[in-house]
Structures are given as structure tokens and as C-alpha cells.
Length: 403
Image (cartoon, helix red, strand yellow):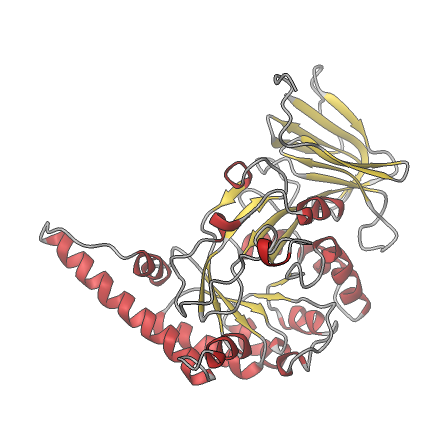
């Protein structure tokens, strides 16, 4: 099956824009992007004249489907706040594709989201990357697990401090993480010894995940706002040698040179919030620009539902207003989050071989008056906006069904 999106202002993001370009999608994958693309005779043609054509945006840190909107307690599955070490927990097991947020994501041009457990535990669990449309999370899956979520700072010490148990301080939170990795090192040694001696071995789900972090298979997504907590995150990464990704990084600009020198990426945000706690005192739309100019690889996040998912691009726009380079702003919601989260072989740009996730915009998406007109995931149109009405394709409907 061939789909050709023609005559638009094509912005591949990882290449130069093409005025009057064509994006050809074959069997759900981008086959060709350019000004002189040969269009197969059987192709469905979508005329994008006068519009901008971009890859679907990538949300690097959100809670779609695990913190459902308008559901209250019944739809809140973000934090299992009964065990400080939740490495064995999987966000995959709690995602409801019927969450209203997925339709909102499409309306904002977001086609892929990395969904993470919350920050109530020092070790929250495994994250998952999904497409923002589908009947079940298994059909939406891009990568699972994508990383392991961990938290430093106020949230875990408040949660367990209220329970009068460890950890109730920053030193306690760091100790829980350190103890967990030391146990994982010992577990790995015992498992390897058992394998060498061909002896049975009792597996532990929590330790199995942490060993994958130690072995470099899974990055460590560290929730941290304050500069001192970022320093602790770096210290722990040094001790155990895992790949660190700073999540939120509200005061990351204070250590921008250190983060750049160490090639530690930052998923910054949410940026449209009040300074609701001490950790957020230095929250500013200027901070993304400071980090980017220092050479830090940057992604912008809504942390949905903290900021609604469809405002992802608007955060990028206002960061540009406060000093972030416009081209870097687009990269911060496309190729950068895809690369940071290990998804660059699937999404984040308009490039042959990647998934056919394409959004047609009425104009420059960094203009707040522009809107997503048509959204395609793997070459299938899943969202459209026409004459003031938005429409989302029903993922449960199949043409062969007798509905």
C-alpha cells in the first residue's frame, strides 16, 4: 500500500526543508522524501499544498493512559507507593488506550509517547514507548521497556516520610537506590556462577531489571529538579556505570557545562506550571535555551497530565521566545527525544526506513495559531481537522468487521 503526501513544505527535521516536496509511505514505512519522488500509480495521494509536513512529535516523558483524565482514583495507576524499589513494575501493564489524552496527543501532532511510572518511589519501574493510537497497548508498542524510572528529591522522601519509613530524607532516597544496585551486582554474580556450574537459580524480577541497567541494556531515567539532586544523580551513575538521562532538570542550567561535558541528556519540563514546590523555584522558559547553547542534548516534555499533552509544541514555541533556537526547538520534540530514548530507528524524522508517522500542519507548528490538520501513523490517517471539527479514527473498527 502506497501513500504519497505531495506539494507541501516538507520539514524532515534532520535535513533541509523541501518546498513542494513529497513524502512517500509504503506499507507503513517512509520510502522516499524529496522534491522529485516517483509516485506509484496505485498510490493514494494527499495534497498538502500550502501546508507544512513534519514527522509526528515524540513526548519523552508522560503518563498517558496510566494517569487517566477525568477518571479520578479509578484511572490513577501512576505510582505503586508501597515499595521504594519498584523496578519490576511495568507501565505497560497499566495503560488504558481509551484515555482521552491519546486523542489530545494526536490533535497536537504527538504520535509517539514514552510513558513512565510516577516519581513517588526512589525506583518507580519500567517505561514503555507507544504510538498514540490503537486498540491495545500491545498493538501500539514501539519499545518495551524503554528505560527504568527513578526519582530523587522531594517526592519519594515525602511519600515515605509520611509513612514514617525509609526513605524520609534525600540521603535515605540515595541509599535506597545505592542498596538496590549493590544487591543487583551480587545477584548478577550469583546468577553467573550458577550458569557456569549449570546449577538452578531462583530468579528475582526486581534484580533482573536492575542487572539490565548495570549491563547497559536500559538507561536510567532520573527524575530530579534541584542542582544538588542532579549532582547526586551523576554521582550514583559514576558509582554503578549506568547510562543516565536527567528527567525534568529544572536547575540543570546551573550545571549545564557539566552535563554537556559528560554527554548526559536532559528531558526538560514541564514548563507551563507554577512554582508549586521548592524544587521548582527556578522553573523558567529560559532554561531550555541555556542548556542547548551549552551543548546539552535536549528534549522538552509536558509530563502529561501536569501539562496537557497537546501543549508540547507550545512549550517549544515559548522556549524559542525566551532564547531557544527555533530549529533546536523542533529537534527537542522530534529527533532528540527519539535518540535519547532509543527510538531513532523508528520515529522522530522524515527519513526512509522510519515509520510513516506524518503530520500535516496548517503552517509553522511553532506558530501558536497553526494546527494539526491531518495525522498519519504508519501511513494510516488517524486524525483530521476539517471545518472546525476534529475526528479521530476508531481503532476498534476494521473494514472486514460487520459492525
